[in-house]
Each structure stands twice: as C-alpha cells, then as structure tokens.
Image (cartoon, rainbow, N blue to C red; front, side, top):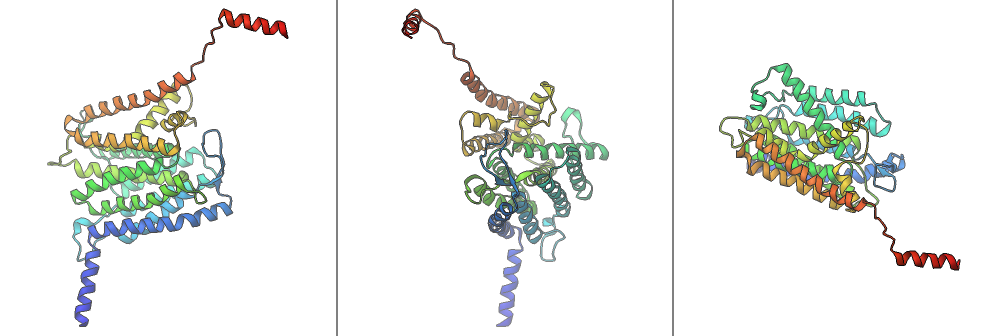
Amino acid sequence: MLVTILTSLKDFFVEFMQPESRIFLAFIAAQLLSAYSIPIIVRISKAKSLTSAPNFRTSHTQDIPTMGGLALFATILVVSLSTINISGFSFLNESTVMPALPSIIAGVTILFFIGMKDDLLGISWKKKLSGQILAMLVLCIIGEQRISNMQGLLGIQEIPYIASLLLTVFVGVALINAFNLIDGIDGLAAAISIIAAFTFGFNFFISGEKEYSILCAIIIGTLIPYFYYNVWGKKNKLFMGDTGSLILGFLMTALAIRFNKVFFTPGSAYLSSVAAISIGILFIPIFDTLRVFTLRILDRKSPFSPDKRHIHHMLLDLGLSHLKATFYIAAANVLFIILAFTLSGIGKTRLLILYFGLAIMMVAIPRIILKRRRKPVTVVQTASNKVGENKLAAGA
C-alpha cells in the first residue's frame, strides 16, 4: 500500500515537472499572485502618496498609483524561479534546461531598481541609460544571448564578438525605451506585451524550447490581472510606471534574441526572414518610436523631449477612449504578426518595406482626419446678412 502511494506521488510529481504541465502551472500561478498583490500595492501606494498627478501629457484626471511595476517584478521573479528549470533534474530531458534565466532575472532586477528610483524620486537620463546598458551586458555576456548573425542584411552574415555585443546592447536599449514610450494610455503596453509573448511562446513550444514557453506563460499570466486593473479598475486602478515598462521592454528583447537564435538554423521554416519576423512581432513600438524620434529631430528638438505625437495620442485626439485606442493599436500589431508569418517567404527586405508602407498609411489616416477637423471655418458674409446687421446696429 505504501509503495503504491509513493509510486503515485512520484508519478504525479514527475508529471508536473514536465514542461507542458509547468506551462499551465506557471500561467495560473502568475495570474493568482499578480491578482493578489495588485490591490495590496494600490492601498500602500495611496497611503504613502506614491501616485502620478495629472499633467499636460497625461489623460487621467486624478492621482493614480504608479507601483504596478512592483507587482510585475515580484510575480515574474517568484514564479520564474519556482517553475523554470535552470540546471536540470535527473528525470528531465536536458534539452529543457534554461541556463540563461539567471542573467534574465539579473537584468530584470537591475531595471527594477532603476525604474523604482525613477518612479519615486526621478533619475537622470544618463543613469537610466547606464542601467539599461548594464542589464543588456549581463544578458549578452553572462547569459550568452546575443545577435551574432546579421542574416545577410547589408550582405553581412556572422559578425565578430565585440560587434555582436555592441549591436545587441544598442537593439536592446532601443526596444526597452520603445516599450517605455508606448506606455502612454491604459492597457497598451500590457496588450502589446501579451500579444508578443503569446507569439514567441507558441513558436518556442513547437520548436522544443519549453522553458522559454514557460517564461512567456508567466509574462502573460502576470499581465492579465494588471490589464484588468489598469483599464477597468476603479478603486484599485494603477499604472506600471517606468519600472514595469522597462522590465517588459527587456523581457521582449530577450525573447526576440532567443527567437532569432532558435529559428535561424538550417531547415527552419523562417530561415530567410526570421529577423524580419521578430521585428514584425514588435513592430508597433519600434515604428512609433522611430517615427516620433524622427519628427522631434526634424523640429530640432531632443529625441527624448516629451510630447503628444505618439500614435495613441492621435487616436485619443480623434475622440477614442483609452480602451478603443488600445484595441485598434493591438489589432494593428496582430495584423503585422500575421503578415510576418504568412508572407515570410518573400524575404526580409520585402517584408520590412511592407511593414513600413502599411504603418505609414495607418498613421496618415488619423492625421488627415485631425487636420480636416482643425481646419478653420471661413464665414462668408452675404449681402442679406450685412443688411440685417446694419438694421440691428441702427436699432441699437
């Protein structure tokens, strides 16, 4: 009897230690922990006045807690270390090990402290940039996650270690800031991250990268409760702050680098376009950041100077609610992902041209509508109106 019970317990334990089961377990655990911690963080934030006051760039009308990034960090940290296999167990397939997790967690932790200081006290852009570079260096050097092949772009294939390091850090810092910049309306950064994590996670799963699938499930599970409180929360509404957006940008960068490494291999269905596909998955924050930076530079302003030129600002100016604007932008992101995978055979150059052409058209439509709405109305004074005005003047 005892042997039977122990055997059953062992079978149950082994089953739940398999990647497929841990994906589900991690997803549920992340949702529960995130949903439990957010109301607590909101209460503490309000009691300590850790809130964001309305200003000329924001659309909220009351003070909102900005400590959502704390819930994201704590949930991702705890659930990742509890469910992702770092070193391997004797009864697990060694291919399921994720040795890069400690470097990913280290990078997330660096950005957590940088973001928290920025949310609470403010921080100079130099210190903020230094923290982002440090986080990327940890991922590249310790985690050995780098862009090591240009995949034929500009006729370049393999690149030297130092060049690879510099390129990866540059791309990572750009993506981290891109996610920081799109976090301008309720639900947008979370929605884009959920869509990207699902896309990466599904492809990791079918390729055998189960531990990365678990990480994606944790990100999605963490963000679903946050999205609810951020969009529909009343007394428990909160923002993720720079803490949350920096962490999400870093995680999306790590997933994109791994995606390129996994699928840029002989026999891969996406071999000829894997770089363009990964860009398509994250195209909305990439394009919006490039567009806004270009407009600021053309106006002889710092590319980091705040304004209201982002895509979500234009949609709000059209009269859309935060939820509708987020839905339209998220839907556009899904469209780019569908195009990326279905048209991967046309090659990366054509895909990139298609992305930018379609994005420019999408941005042009609301701009044209806004210009027409803001066009001054010319009042034509007819002879009869003039006579009527003269009579009124005489009567006065």
